[in-house]
Length: 148
Image 1 (cartoon, rainbow, N blue to C red):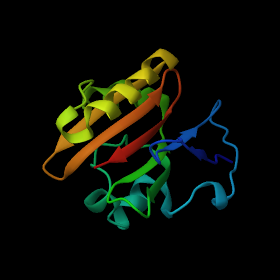
Image 2 (cartoon, rainbow, N blue to C red):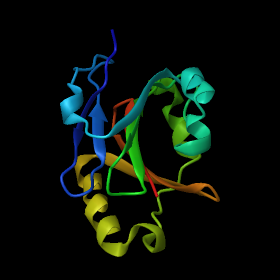
Image 3 (cartoon, one colour):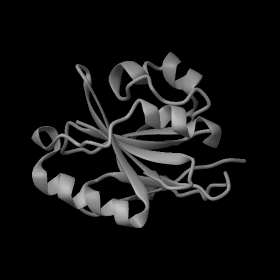
Image 4 (cartoon, rainbow, N blue to C red):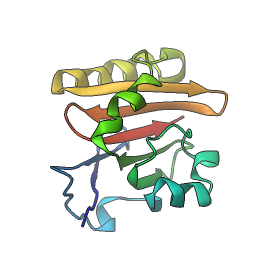
């Protein structure tokens, strides 16, 4: 059974999720504060209007274990999801490797840029509905996301 593990990155409230060969470790909800919802599939998330409220409708069709979190003292959202590794290049093709400092702030952009040294792709998606950052470890088929 595939399960998502998550932990909070210290300074940002961002959820870090991951997987190892499509097997995930379970973390109790006490480690994932302020969880809004979890969805098994993209279809389940669509029915719940997740793509109208929290995420752009650009996730790979086979995405699973979709987690949506809201930090109590913030208007932003974050979460994670996993997908079929064969959809990685198609998903990355709709994202940008340029993070808008006007949206995220220079200090924050500099801080998350350090993830590149850890072989994590830091990618953005901007639209009239919001601004998102996706953190996707190299060689992994899971990503974390944040919305502002």
